[in-house]
Image 1 (cartoon, rainbow, N blue to C red):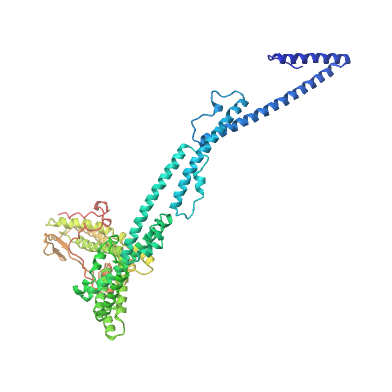
Image 2: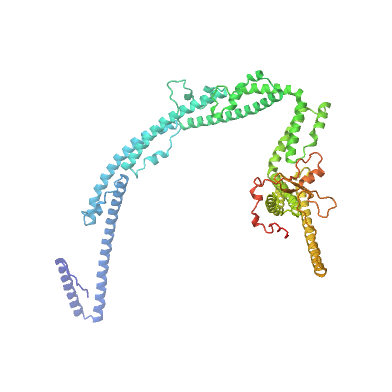
Length: 601
């Protein structure tokens, strides 16, 4: 049976009483018919299902109607929000969300509909304002672009209906003012560019009117009715023209410098008089000024360069008679460069051979001079690439000289005497031991640098005609042999000392001869100015037991007869302050570098 437990209105109570009456009537009919209780329950259940279906259908219809109304209200509310957002009224709350909003959906829909219409009218008025300002912006933009084309994206960008706020309107007005300001600045910039082009054309001797007319006819200023063009194309054309003229100015200035350098060189060679140089005195002023400071009309014109070029050609013709002297001078310069860098010069241009070929007429002196100039350039470049290795060679040779001095010093039995200046030699010996201990590392680094240079240059590094790597390898082998000889000598001395000790223990010791403390009778030494004794340089004889250490100087003296070795082993102490820091180290950090203790008396 249906249950009605909730409070009901009068109409509902009437409906319920009617249903109850009909139900009672139906039950009476079933009783008269004689329906069983099971059939009555089944028919009542069917009746309840039919009633529920009717209610369900009505509920669904009402829910759909509510959803449609709610969707319409939401759409109107969203439209209101969109319109207010486009107008920049983000601080105004939605009417549907206000405290005085209607309760039912139909009332809400009726409330928001006129608001939407009002906002649409306001949007149309605001859009007209934007359109007017945008038209002015397009006009000035077209002037800036030279009316060549109007960007179609301006409308889509500037007339965005999604943003018609007062803030955006202010931005459009500001943009319009900026365009007007840009127009004024462009006009000023165009005038500055035109003035710069005029100055450059004057310096280069070019036609100014023809140059600017190629950019735009209005830049020449011949027509009063035609305003100066300020478009991007004009500005870019002026910038490119200025860049081209500056490049041309730079090229001509460099060409003038090159020609002037040849002219000055010829003046020096030919001993040109001051009177002949006066007519080209303008060149000195031009070359002495910075590139940007050259503003004199015609200073870098082709006529000026051609005049100097013609003078150089005339002097070259005159120089031919003195070419022999010039060839000898340049050859001597080549030999000086090669001598300083221990490079063998090309024998094909030797002084005697060059003189003979010039006298016989077999060779053009100009070609010979050009060949020597090429050799000088190559020698200079190679000297620059060899500089680091040559510096290392000098440091290594200094270390070798110190090693020779230290060997002589160590053989001096009176080195620890209390004579005047002995402490100076002692300090030098300490520094020399530090340097000598670094010789193997210096040689290995020098070999690595030399091989890297050869790999890079694809040729051998020659030192006075001998490969430096071979000299260094020979030096390493000889040094190793020398160390082995020293070791064998020390072992032999130890053995002799042991035998002598056993002999003394068995037969008794003999008094040793008195040692001489006089510095005057020591062979191989000489006194310094301060009273100290410095070992003189020694030379190993061919028959000595210790092999001779061969350095580039010894190779140079043996195998190259053209250059003479001018530097000898110094007998004075070296200036260790001038020795690079990388080749020195603390004496206390070198193991075994302490001097031998003085003999006990």
